[in-house]
Image 1 (cartoon, rainbow, N blue to C red):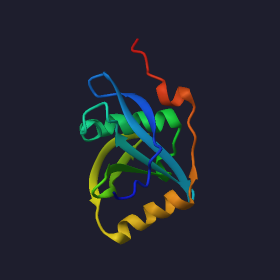
Image 2 (tube, rainbow, N blue to C red):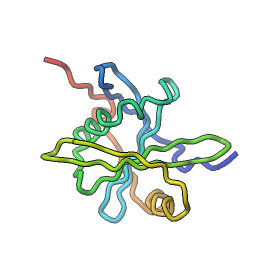
Image 3 (cartoon, rainbow, N blue to C red):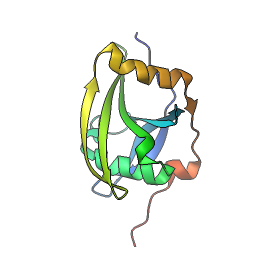
Length: 140
């Protein structure tokens, strides 16, 4: 069995783009004045929830955690016992505080993943309040 670099992610309740409650796993580290946000699909939901609702989830995470988007990096974490932790990065464009577009790329070589592993090993884990993890906006 290969190593899981993020074994204790926490569940965050979000709304998907259809307005349904969804749960993803999240972990945040700060390292070198940058926020590293890792997202992983929850076992209870579809394995492609993040892929289908990326922009919606990232926007809610930024708002709920009051993140400075100019100092935030977003990653998808996928773990299997055969491959261990693998990562993909979301390259996000923002305009006036709104997510305007993003691209996604799986990180495959050692140079691409070394910075992530360093942030996980040397970075400071950011704790979340229950309100940040479970607060669902109410439609008016």
